[in-house]
Length: 391
Image (cartoon, rainbow, N blue to C red; front, side):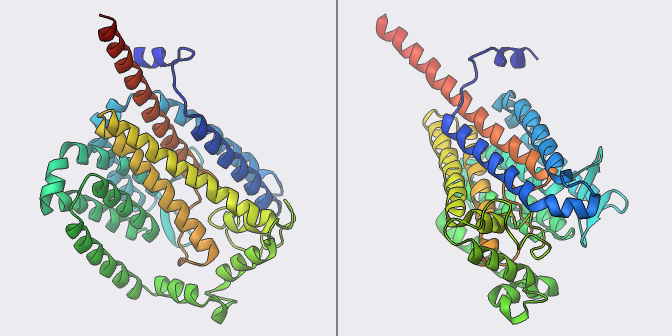
């Protein structure tokens, strides 16, 4: 409590102004587009056109509050409890599969209901995975660089995690978690030859999972040629592509999109990017892509600054968060543009959803915390150095 009280003193917290601008911009644009894409839907379902905008505002408020708490929590606390948090994540994945406890939506059991709000467990596990992997590579960096066992050991845990996610089923989140784990280990210096073997194995495994699961196979075939079955398996992608075509350079205007009017399913969640393309055009699409690029760039800049300050755990936290933001946003936008098969992944800080929004706010806050501590460390070292020079 004393630590938190000290951090609350005015002027003590060091902010990254570019990161603040990027995150505020993504939250603002996302909120406006969620409102635009959901007014008609809320009117039909709840007879209150502002149902989704009000709830999303609540999600953002809760996310900012939780993010505030995360930003005030020292990094060494996350490092100390990282392993236990990951185990907690595994327990939550088991709980969500217990009949009567997990909430089932459209054939998938991915949510827990807490206080009337649905929390997607996989989002919590992604957050804990970054913390756990950052701690693991910090403790076992030499082993990861020199032996195959050091590389494969943590992946057994992630294999269990992925199996639990596939039971929901949530193939997309399983892929994201493996990408986070492998990305952090690659940056920690894992041998490229071992990575090649691992990626080949995972590629074969992913192919088999798609081939032997009919609904995944339909997604892949419809992605390759959505127009072949535009009224069934290719329906969602066809209308997403129509949204991009209608948007042209400057869009049809905010609120004037047609595809969101019961043509494009999940317009306010997974396919929000298509609504942006139709209403704000190429300029809006380019703006969102640029903002996510800046977010990933700042994460890696903070990671490199942490390495330079000899704080490896903080560095791998920043790298892991950058990989997470970058890969998930790339997949979501790629799905919307028809360059990747359909996956149920949200657009970070933008799509409608309580669990996703709150966890993403916490993830960004953790990045702010890393930046703050590294700035403090560098400032203190500079003071010490100047004292020695003056002596």
